[in-house]
Every structure is written in structure tokens, then in C-alpha cells.
Length: 125
Image (cartoon, rainbow, N blue to C red; front, side):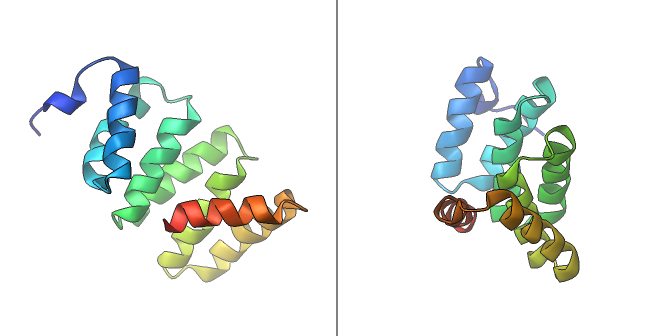
């Protein structure tokens, strides 16, 4: 794969660029940038979550699942990653696995129903 201008610069520059491409619905380009960032800073959750979202929206569901499971391995109470994993599994036709994660999200959210709904809309949007 050829390097392009958007893969250069500081990590902060590339993070900003990846967010810009994601917001422009250029999910494959955002994923390409984010993949490099995740390799550089694997402990950071935000780039990995945005990478998972880019994969989800570009129907690369296996890759989205892998990234989400990595987030949850590092931080099991990351409710947004668990919600996304549930939705990703649903899209793959794996409803019983999805239900487990979605029930966990509901239990973790408790009375935070409106916040959970906002997270749900971020996934769909």
C-alpha cells in the first residue's frame, strides 16, 4: 500500500485527520490512519474505538469485532465498546452472543437510560 499525505505527521495530527475523515463518512481512509495510530499507542482506547466504528460503518464487521474485543480485554467496563460489540454481533447474525453483551450494557447503565440511548445513536449514525 502506498503512503499518502494523511499518514504522516504527529500522532495528534493524524488523530485529527482520522476524525475529519470519519465525520466525512470516509470510513476506509479513517481506518487506514487509525490502524497506524493503534499500532503506535495500543493502550489508548479512543483511537481503537474510532477504528472499530470505522470498520463497523464500512461493513468490516470481523475487524470491528476484533478491535472491540481488544478494548474490552483492556477495559472490561467500557460500556460503549460492549454496546458496539453487541450491535456488531447482531449484524453478523450472532444474536445469542449479542444479547449477552447488550444485557451487560443494560445492567452497567442502570438508570443511565438516556446516556445509553445517546451511545446507541452514535453507533447508528
